[in-house]
View (cartoon, rainbow, N blue to C red):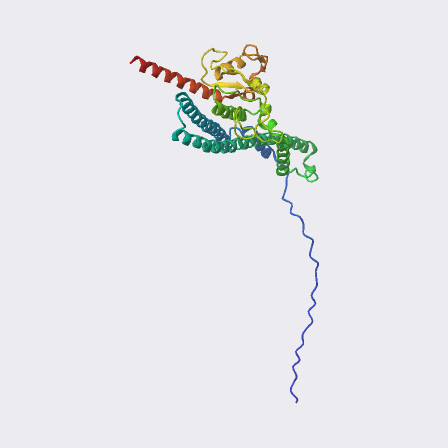
Length: 354
């Protein structure tokens, strides 16, 4: 019997080619907000000022603004003191008819280098102040946005309750995250659309910084601070050259502009007639009062009242105290300088007696 022949049969496998499904854009799961979630949004809106994180953030921004103001005052005041020392040396030389000494030459070179460095640091400090104001504005915007989100979410929740639970599946759930992002973008775009004068020139923190810089640069006896309309150039660049300064390009600032801001600042409160200890100034009329005195004056009044400074027609109210008044760091510096000068005079009198 012939040997059997083994035949290796290979079966033909049939592969079914299946078309791949089109990718679907990811959509995060969304559900209508519950009453508990809506209440939490309300708590965020109301409690944002007192929350631990927000409070610490605001305190840090406030401290940064205070340090920037005092630092820019100290830097410019140091330059002014060096310039006064140089002027005294020049006056003595002219009086005695002597030639310029090496010490005077060295002081001139030192002042030139110091002035350049202080000018650069002043510009950087001014930019940092505007950044701090931007950060504070973002915090206030978030507070307003959360309040709007709560109002809208609560209204949607009430509408669902009136329609009945069976309609929940038909109505698309609102995205709180999307609404938050959209409103933030809208707020940011609005803030960016404002020019620098509108954003900063009337802001209490910027006013305080500007006054401290000016007092440090020119002193109590120098030309006054220009009107806030002159604080920024048409292109938005800040004007940080003290009136009467000879360095840098001259700014278009006439004597009439300077005269508008000229005012003798009293260190006594118009209400108590006593020396100021915690000076609070008004953002509109610029008059300064003792904090407790002006707060009592407004709190005891019914509605709006006129500025207690004689001859001023500005209107105040207790409800707008936080927006209309601020701790005037520049006046506080003047109080400290006046006290120091008084102490120095008393020490000189004691030395003369002995």
